[in-house]
Structures are given as structure tokens and as C-alpha cells.
Image (cartoon, rainbow, N blue to C red):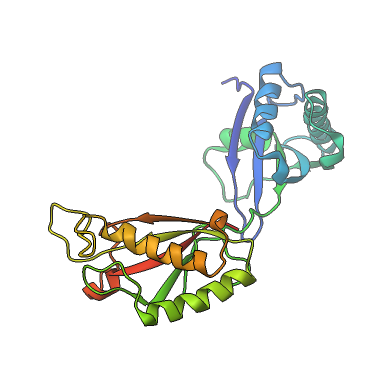
Length: 269
């Protein structure tokens, strides 16, 4: 059976390395490459984030037939064919750090089946993309205090900033807590944030609770606004702050009093 030139590409993740291998398969005793195959190879490389490509290595191979000297030359010709096609299609020569013909790939003596298929897969060139590690992804967290290098989405849960049932007014203990918050915010002037108000214990068909002071269903909003207004009094720039009521949509799943709360969420660092 006559084997046509095929392209097969696959990704390998080797331990701590982050390499991607693209393999190009050749016919017996050939090193020429069709334009379609070259385009597929270039397309593969360009599909990778270019900022992550540190270098490219090109390794040529042959099957186990023929003399060593001839096969080293053939495998090297295959590697150079791929290199020339890449450069001719806009891949910069500077990142290609290795072009090497490896010669024959021997078949183990105990292998008796599928030898033609094994040989066809050994007539190839491997294009190895050495990738830089992906940047570390920081996930938002929950904290009790502000700190350096906070990221967008970090939440400040204020344990001592709790409200009476049905009330949006700040207690003395809550004001003392906000005094500490204001001092921290003066220290980290780069942080912008949303003040989020919450409620507990509403009827199943109501997401918001009634504020006893206003007799309107706006309790979580009023709690957030109370904190906002107090921080304004403490000289925190309004441009850094916004406030919003979330009703009972973000329950902590603990005792009801813990949902009568306000949290601060970082929106810009």
C-alpha cells in the first residue's frame, strides 16, 4: 500500500515542561513537502500564543532500513525542508535553535506486528515548540483586612460590622470597625471597591427585606449606603467607592445574623 504524506499533530505535556510537538510524516526515501502540508504546519505554530513560544526545535527521523550515513543525511534533509518552509512562511529564524537529523529509528527485536505502520511513523520530522510557563492565575479570596497586592474580586468580610434585624443603621461597634477600615483605606489609596449590602430571613418570594426605618423594601441597599456615607465622613474619596444591595442572594449559609452584613469587594487595584 502506498503511503501518502500525512500530517498528524498532538500535544505532549512532559512533567514540569510545557512543550508542544507537531509531527510531519514522509513517504519512504523522500524529503519533499507539499504546500498543503507546509501550510498546516505553519497554521499549527501560529495557533499557539506567540508570547509563550520561547524556542523551536526541529528533529528529523528515518525508518530502520538503509545505511546509517544515508539515513542521517535523509533525516537531516527532512529537518531542513521543514525549517525552510517555516522561515518562508514568516516564522522567524531566531527562535529556531535546533535543526538536527537523528537518523534511523530502530524497531525492537520482539516487535512482529504492524511493522509497516511503525516504519511509516518513524519517517517523520518533529517540530518541538518550547513554551514559557503560563502565568500564575490568582483567584479572588476572602480576607478580614486589607493587604498589599489585593486583586480584583477579593472580598473583605468585616466580622464586627453586623446590623440589627430590619435595620440599616450603624451601631457603635460597627462605626468602630469602620474607623479601622478607613485607616486601612488611607494606606492603600490605589484600591477601588464596591460596598455590598446583604439581608437574611426574607419570605421565599422576596429577595429584598423591608427597612423598618423607611418602611420600604430596600434594606440591603440602605446598609451598603450607610457604610458608604460613613466612609465619606472619614475622608475616603467617593471616586473610589460604589455601593449596591444584594438582598438575600449571597447567603453565607450560617446563622441569620451573619447575613445581616456588609462586605467590601475590590473592583480595581
